[in-house]
Length: 90
Image 1 (cartoon, rainbow, N blue to C red):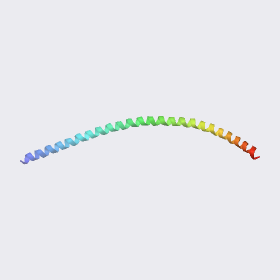
Image 2: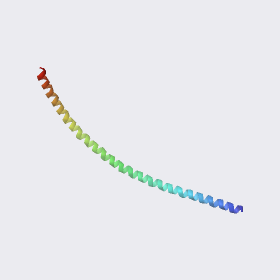
Image 3: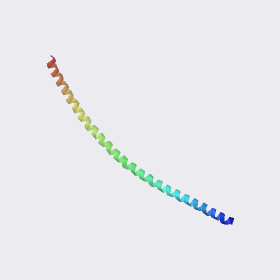
Image 4: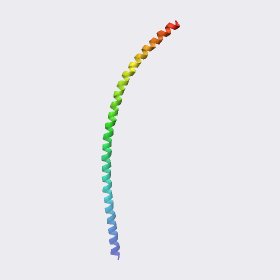
């Protein structure tokens, strides 16, 4: 009778250890797949961020030139207003 009990305990322990090794291998496989997906997302996002950065840089150049143009127009208007005020204030 004790031999049957020890055999059952041994069979259960072997099954448990085998199951743990199987689940460990499954988890490692899922981890590798997850790492691959994260790496591909990182590559895609890096490319998109680089594109957006280039667009912002080109907008900065265009806006700088437009702001400089507006600044010269404002300076011209300021001198015109100053001349106008000088005529009326004497």
